[in-house]
Length: 70
Image (spheres, rainbow, N blue to C red):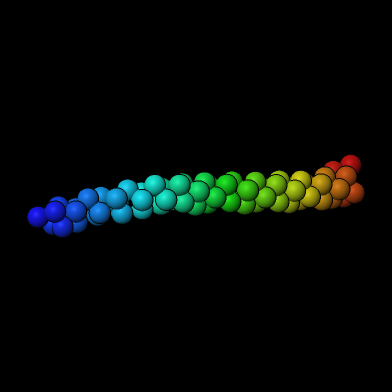
């Protein structure tokens, strides 16, 4: 009977170890993904802002140099 009772206990220990070692890894991966998305998002936003600024700058130059807008 002792051997049969030990199986659930061993399973419990294994599950506990998997949870203890697995949860931090999952959290780490999730944090990494979120951080990556934030960094990529910032880079994309920065590029879009630069692009918009350049387009605006070109439009302003055209407006100043054209004869339509003296």
